[in-house]
Length: 321
Image (cartoon, rainbow, N blue to C red; front, top):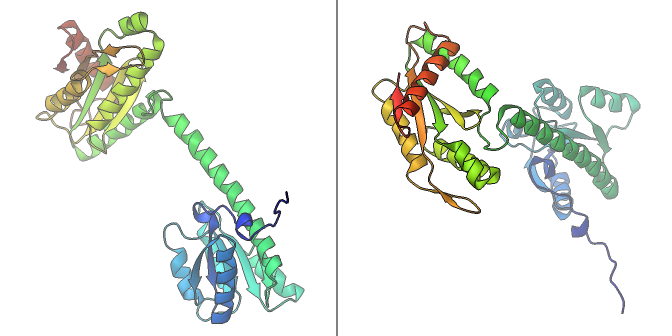
């Protein structure tokens, strides 16, 4: 039995997810554009075409602009050299890889193009395999960059979010509270602070195990997040305690807002792998004084005392300081 070992164009196509596999062709020659577009699309790239430097610059201002660029040196309006300079002067977080296409092959011209910000150059007329190889170099660099950016974003997320629940961690929510205290004092706008504690959580861990306890914390965090506004901040303060900052929430809204969260937690049981648990929460609430007289430490002490009173007076209730 014979085996077909033919390597097709499609089998060598690049991974084109995201901006790495998108290519901008900027060339005022219609024939060159059509040839390049045909080759690149055959290799699996997504192609965006500009007929001159002005149009290319406009495309590059858009969100999710291509990251691989083939720029002709000589174009009407903004030429390739000027485009290179503008792209590098912007200092975007995400790097764009530039291939400068030129009919000039003198060493001083090549140096001029690289000094302007080009990463590589292509001499016209294009040699198909050379173009493909040079594009692969750019794609490898951009793919590496994408991986580094993703790793950086993941580290940033881990530094500010609670690993178990995915909401803000203690340091991040306290930092937000500090900034909200400063903002509220500056603008004299109302802000409510809630401290929430799960009732008898130790009994859940002791009776059903820590895996069940972890699932309870995850579900509670999700329920709280679903019943606050998009600009409210929910953080895990520690253990089974959560801190919630509600900008713009005044004395007429604070108890209603807190009770909505309490009911969201307790109205439905939480299903874990081994059991169905009824979970309730006690909430202490306080308002930031509009004159900015209280620091975040003072407001935390006040809301903690309110939480103590909520628990001491029967649990599963809201107590406003």
